[in-house]
Image (cartoon, rainbow over all chains, first blue to last red; front, top):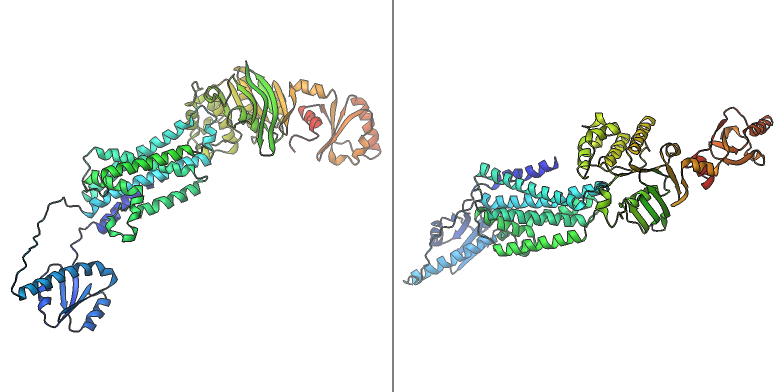
Length: 326
Length: 304
């Protein structure tokens, strides 16, 4: 029953995310209010695809509309001076528009003096495969699911230990290492099953491409092994199933949201950007995105490999060193 | 070769001396009983001998092997029933028997184990749905499933109803007929007397008597025992100093007198009754038992 939820949860997660964020976002359009006595600049701005320009008569009414959320930005154009008003959540847009305005004004000024800019900027489109939100998202879900299977998988062992079943088995010729390895093998098997399930669901519902490169399977194996190992490492340092569960939640929950498996780390505030680099899930997600879908890697596959191997090695060593059978 | 050889075995838990210098040998084919009250060290002895617990001191050999040095050589040839069974709750009885059977190089057919333990009707029931007595019988069955040479049973009959107890005695007698060695612990003295070739009486971590039940009784008692309910004796002091009575022991339930001369005791008791010291309505005369031996050696009853 527990296993059932482990299987189903990521699929449900995928469906919800897919439905909410699945649409390809149109390029964002800036809504701008202008107060412009001459109207010349406003007319030029109005030609841009990125801007929806509304002319306001008074700066005070324009600012009121900005506060009410009607405008992203307000431009107040006076002689020799252009003021750009914005609210904190639109800081990024203000920055973009500032550059745009400056170059426009410069160009206009040059033209007024009868000169044309000597250096032209030309835009050339380079074809990179187009990735939808879902393409980015699916490997993230897979990474999350395998992390959870690995971490929570150790709880079964903790429960056998707590219920003294392992102790009872200790009276039989069964070697307990064999018991542990069979647990681990089952976990790995379940991980591959889960992988198949998520990929199938992703293709069925969202036409996310099915990975072709066999190296993808290697990464599934490496990632699962890392998190299974981390799970047993935590199990070694806890006594009861409740404490093990608590610690695992404490580990997996921040990882789920801070590893950049659901959105690019650029979307995070600057001050938090270091965190994904500390979490193994970031590297696992990065490698899966690349090997499953072909999304360019963020850290480089070699780094992904080395860091995951590092986590695997250290947690495996600690799990073995501090293992508790009873 | 001994099935089990134990020399100066010690196991301490901090200041508590659970097993404090125990020595005994069990020859192959014997049914050996370790007898004692709760907390005497029976379970600790079984668990150190079978290698489930590490001993602090002493020597243990099971079928010639040290269970700590050579656990696989020992464990594949012994079956252990633990006092409290800890089994997979979501396996059925039959699945559990098959699973445990798969751990051993030789095994009894699952059907035979079910028949021996009387669990045939429960074969498809989940372990967590069994009653305490059924779980205990399953646990005994798991000690037999390996068709092993030595079977350790730790309180196999405690918590069983009288009928289940008796059918378990049959299992032990069957094992004896098969030539298996059985090491069992119990606090039922009648059980030990009936089943065991030899018993060791253990109290507070030490063995206080060891031998065949008959020999132990004969060694400590040539007397007969006379029991009078405690409520019918008004003055226990009146019983001391009567020459025909060799020993008197008193507990909450009854007063037990031991005597070599039954006829004289009845005369003496009759006189006491006439004088109003006691009543003679529910008097019982019996042979001395292991219970009396334990009482004599420790001053306590075994089930206090």
